[in-house]
Image (cartoon, rainbow, N blue to C red; front, top):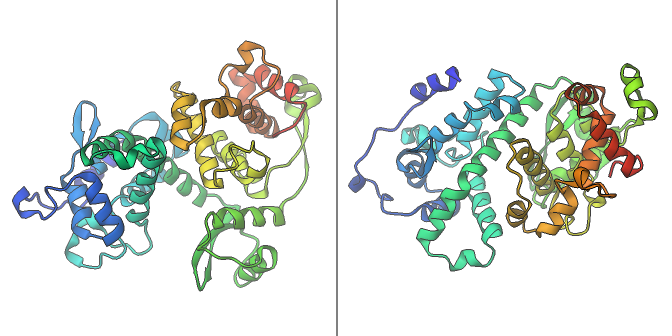
Length: 391
C-alpha cells in the first residue's frame, strides 16, 4: 500500500529521547495502560507510542503505528475497506488514533504520539477494553499474574485486538460512504449518542422522530446505542417480497423470500460484506440466541460472529480459543458455529450457518456470488434442513 508507506514519513514523529530523560521509561506496559486509563497521562501515551516496540511483524519488533501500517498492506484490510484506498487510509489513521489520541491533551507541544483531537477516538477506552479482554481470556488467573506475565499477555493479545480495531474502522468509513443513511448525534444531559437514520428524515425532524419512536435515551446505560438503533430499525422497517428471477432455475422454491432483517441491515445487504451483515443481524436479534449467548451484550455478539466468520475465512477457526476469549464453553461455540456439520451429516444446522445461509438467499447479490463460487448447494442444504427459518 504505497499511500500508507508514504504516510509513515509524513506523520509527525517525536524525536528519540534517551531512557534516562523519559519519566516512564522503566514502566512495564500494563503500568503504562493504567496511567493512561486512570490519569490521562500524556507522557505514558508518548512512551507507549514512541518508544515501545513490543509487537512482532515479519521477524522484527515494531511500534503500534508501524504494526497497523504493515497489517494494512495485507489482503484482509483491503477487502474490509471494500477495496477502496481512501477508506483504507482513513481507517489506518483512525486505528492509530485509537491508541494515541487523548482528547484531554491540549498542550500544543505534545506531538503526533499524543494527539488532542476532541472529535477523534479516545485511547483510554481502547486500552481499557484491551485489559477487559485479557481478564476475560485469563479469568481469575489474570490478577494473580506478575506484571511481567501481564506484559507478555498484552503482547500476545494486542495484534488480534489491533486487527479487530482496523476492521471496525474500515466498516465505519465504508458506512459513512453509504448514501441511504447518515449519522445523527442525539444530545442529552447524560452525554451524546450517535445512530444511523434514513437521509429522508432531515433537520429538526430528526430529533423529534427519534424521541417519538425511541422514547427516553440515556447514553450512560450499557449497550444503549444498540438498543436505540434497534428501535429505529423497527420503526422504519419495511416488509417486502424479493424476487430472485435471475436465479429461478437454481433456487426453485426458494426464489422468493420475505425480509425479516431490520431496516438498517436491509439497506446494506448488497453494499456491505456478508460477515458484517450477519454480525449485525445477530447482534440486533440477541433475544433469539441460545441462553448462553444472551449473556453477551449486542456489541459482543457482533464481535463474536465477526471473529468466527473471519477466522473461518482465514482457515484458522478454533472454537475453544474463541470460547475462552468470550467467556463461553467450546460446546457452546460449536453448537452456535460447528465447522463440520455438512460433512458429518448432522440433522441440525448450527445457528450461525443457518442465519448466514438465509442472508445469502435473501440477497440476489450474495446468492449470485454463491452460485458463481459453486457453494450454492451448501446454502440450499442449510436452508432446507432449517425448514426455511432464518434463526
